[in-house]
Image (cartoon, rainbow over all chains, first blue to last red):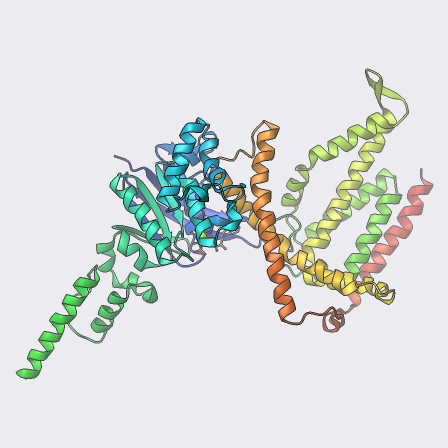
Length: 292
Length: 266
Ligand SMILES: Nc1ncnc2c1ncn2[C@@H]1O[C@H](COP(=O)(O)OP(=O)(O)OP(=O)(O)O)[C@@H](O)[C@H]1O
Ligand SMILES: [Mg+2]
C-alpha cells in the first residue's frame, strides 16, 4: 500500500540559470505511511524547508514526483488545494499573524475552507485548547499584545484548526520555553494516538530521537539517512557527522567506545546508557581485584 | 519563489560592472534626457538596441529581464490606449463618441518604446552597481546641497539602508505569502475583493515586521553613536578611470549627436 507521502527522484534548483543557482534538493526518495511520525533533521541550508514546501503545493516538482494523500503535486490544478490535506506551519509562524484578534487569526484557515461559522467556532476553541490558550479572554485579545512564544502558539493553533490529514512543522521548537516544547510534544503525541501523520523538522537529533521512530537526515540537499532510529544508531559513520547534535548519553557512550572500552553503542535511552556504564564499571572493578 | 529579484545587484566583472557609479549615473541621466526629448523612431530603436547590447555584454540575464517586462504589459497597454483615444487627429476607429486616432497610436507606440528603454536603462544601473556604490555615487552628486544646510548625509544613509533592506523585504513578503497560501489565501482568485483581502494578509505582517525592524535598527545606530557625518572614506574610494572617461565620451556623443539629428529629421 502506498504511503500518504511518496517522494521519488525529486530534484530542486533555485534561481536556475543565474549566477545564484543553488541545488537545494538532489535525488530525494522518501515515503511516509499513514499515522507515522517523521523527524527531518539536517544542518542549516540543507534543504529541509524546500523539501516540505513540495508537500503542500507551494513548490511544484521540477524533476521527479511528489504524491501527497494520493494527489499528484505536480498538477497545478490539484496542488492548489493541497493545503487542505497537508498543513504546513512555517519556521517562525508568529510573523504571519495579521488579524485583529486571536480568534479571527485562528479562524482564518477554517473560514477559507468555507465552513459554517458554528463549526469554525468549535474548531477555533478546540485548537486554542490544544496549544494551551483556553482562557476565554485570550481569544479576543489583539495578537500584538502577546509575547513571541504565545504568538507562536496562536499561529500553530491556526493550522490545527484546519484539521489537515498531515501536519508539517518547520522547526516548531526554536525559541520556545520548556512549557512550549511540551505543548508541541503533546500535540504530536495526540496525533500519534489518533493515527494521524506528522512531519517535524528539527535542528536537534536529540529532540527527534525522544519522539520518533522514523528519521530522515538531509545534508547539502542529499538524503544521507532514512529509516528507524534503531538503524541510525548502528551507523556511527553517519552519526559522527553531527557529534554535537547527539543526546548527551550517546556522546558519553561514544566517547567510551572511542577510548577502546567494550561498550554497546546502539542504545536509545538514558536508562540503557546508565546500565551499560554500570556494567562497564563492574567489569573494570573485577579486573582490578583479580589482575590476570 | 523566483529566487532572483528584478533590479537586484548581480555579481559580475564586466566592463559595465567596473565603471564608476558616478559614470553610470551620469550616463543614465543623459539617456533619460535623450529618450524624453527625441521622438524619432530610428533614434529610439538605436537606443533600444544599445540597451540590449549593454545588457548582453554585462552578462545580465536578458531573458529574465524581458520576462519581467512582459509582466507590466497591462500598464503599457493602458498607456497606449489612453494616448490613442485622447490624441486628436485622423480617426481610425470610433467607439461611441470617442475615437482612436492615427496620431494617437503613433504617439502611444513611441511612448511604450520610451518606457521600455527607460526600464532597461534603470535595470542596467541597478543590476550592475552594488547598493553601497550607488548610494555613494548619489551622495557625491548631492554634496553641493550640503552647502545649503540640507541634511544630505542623512538622506543618503536612508537611501543606502533602504537599498540594503529591499531584498530582505521581498524575501519576507514571499515567505509570508507562502505561509498565507498554506492557510488557503487565494492570491489568484478571479474575485477582486478576495484578492485584496489575501494581499492584506501579506501587507499587514510585513508592515509590522518593517516597523519593528526600523525601531531596532534606530536603537542600534543610536547606541553606537550614529551622527550624520559625511563618509569621507567611502567618498574617496570612488575613482574615475580611463574606461569611465571613454564611457562618458561615448554616451555624450550619442546624446549630443542624436538629439539634434532626430529633431531635424522630424
Ligand atoms: N527562495 C530562494 N531562492 C534561492 N535560494 C534559496 C531560496 N530558498 C532557499 N534557498 C537555498 O536553498 C538551500 C536550502 O534552503 P532551505 O531553506 O531549504 O534550508 P533549510 O534546511 O530549511 O535550512 P534552515 O535550517 O536554515 O531552515 C540553501 O542553500 C538556501 O540558500
Ligand atoms: Mg528552513
